[in-house]
Amino acid sequence: MRKPKSAPKYPNLVAEMSRTGVEIQDLCQATGKSKSSIYDYMRGVGNGDFTIADAFAIQEAYFPGMTIAYLFSKTPEPGAAVATA
Image (cartoon, rainbow, N blue to C red):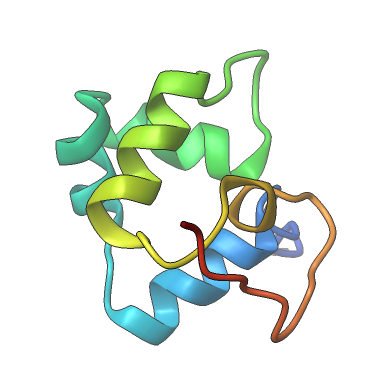
C-alpha cells in the first residue's frame, strides 16, 4: 500500500516553481545544496531547513518579483505574490 503524498512545507514556492518551470536542480544550483536536502526541506522531513541565505539566493535567482515572505510561507496564498522594490 502506498503512503499518501504529504503536502509541501512551502506551497507557494512549489506553486511558483510549477508556474515558471523552476526545478529542484535549479534550487540546488542557487543554494549549493544536494537534491536530497532540497527535497527534504520542501517536504519538511528531518530537522534541516533552508537558511535565510538560501531563501535570498532562491528568490534573487528565480523569483525576483516575489517576496521571501510569500515564497516561504507555510500557508498557501494564491495570487498573493507582491513585487519587491
